[in-house]
Amino acid sequence: MRLTILGGGGFRVPLVYGALLTDRGEGRVTEVVLHDLDPGRLQAVMRVLAEQAGAVADAPAVSATTDLDKALDGADFIFSAIRVGGLEGRAHDERVALAEGVLGQETVGAGGVAYGLRTVPVAAEIARRVAALAPDAWVINFTNPAGLVTEAMSRHLGDRVIGICDSPVGLGRRIAKTLGGNPREAWIDYVGLNHLGWVRALHIDGRDQLPRLLADPELLGSFEEGKLFGVDWLQSLGAIPNEYLHYYYFNREAVRSYQQADKVRGAFLHDQQARFYEELKRPDAPALTVWERTRAEREATYMSENRETAGAGERDADDLSGGYEKVALALMRAIARDERTTLILNVRNRGTLTALDSEAVIEVPCLVDANGAHPVAVAPLPDHATGLVCAVKAVEREVLAAAESGSRANAVKAFALHPLVDSVNVARKLVEGYTAVHPGLGYLR
Ligand code: G6P
Ligand code: MN
Image (tube, rainbow, N blue to C red; front, top):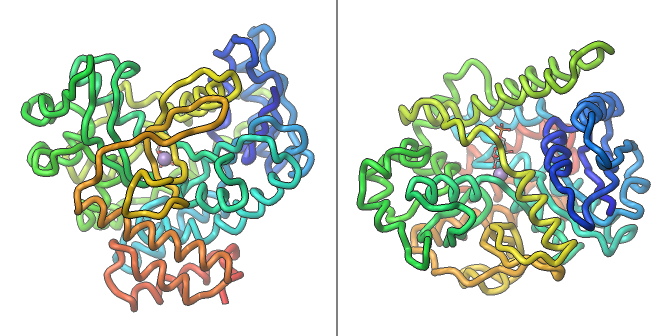
């Protein structure tokens, strides 16, 4: 079984490889092909993987290439984990928006729109290459903004592309543990778009235990989302939102604290990773140790501004271990070995949310087997959530239209319609600001 990783020189690739090393079963991945535009990054990551493989018998063989067609040829699974414009691009996404007084975040608000505008044309081109060279491969999309990018790719690959994110899994795990249940046995009623979903029920032993959590302020305030959103607001909502909804429900505070931060997140990660890749140029650098140290620092500082405005304190130790590599591995196993399982994934709607058309990619629990991911029926969303989901999906559709037509007017519309952008004038300025700093937006006319 061959797995190709696009963005193979990326910082989080060792997480994926680490997960593969734990898989000893029949039909596991035996060959990993890393693809990246930057040979230096590939080399650095190869060194970390070599140390991870160390004494592990039959560790998957790793090779690297900068040739996309070679990388795709013969792949059974393709992980797409690219970052168009790099972390420097992400820093610009944040800064341009914050300078206009609106949220600039990797996936949410104006920053997410800018990142989508840059990424969709590249992801669509990759999808076309996959359709031509590896039509039977399954593509697992990690690339953010994950829902939008998955939808762009699905226009070429249909249901053979599946988007993943670790945030719903982390949320479900925290709620189940708070309730004293086993996260693996819990049934989580979650739905929305990527980074825009709500847990409305969580069944343990055949009963919805969420009402018990919502009724108990002490329990409710004891885990990440309780601290972030506050007990009162969660009780009013009657649901537990994905942590990314903090950018919506506490937008003003989030914008202010990001404006005041020493560095935007993209710049922090950029500097941190530049040091990592630089250090690994030294032949005697302890690659795995340096990587682990860098990763720990990244995890500890995740959403720190949001937690600060909410007075939420440090992250729980359990939340520092990541998790999206586990979702990816579970998904790949379920498909490759027909090991039926349920995972929260980004797939086409097919009637799940009645307010959206069937092609719209949503985030929802899916039954996964050798035939792919099949969304399950969930309870309908309340009006306030449907409103947000529809508004943000309309923005995503404008991004897709802009990427296809190259029209600036579509790009302005995408920003202007976003619930976190409060003026058409601001939207126009955002397009000006972003096109000035991003070469990847040169296609907008
Ligand atoms: C969460 C999100 C991902 C995101 C990651 C890293 O896991 O679900 O989509 O890429 O956080 O965020 P960071 O700010 O560290 O890049
Ligand atoms: Mn995510």
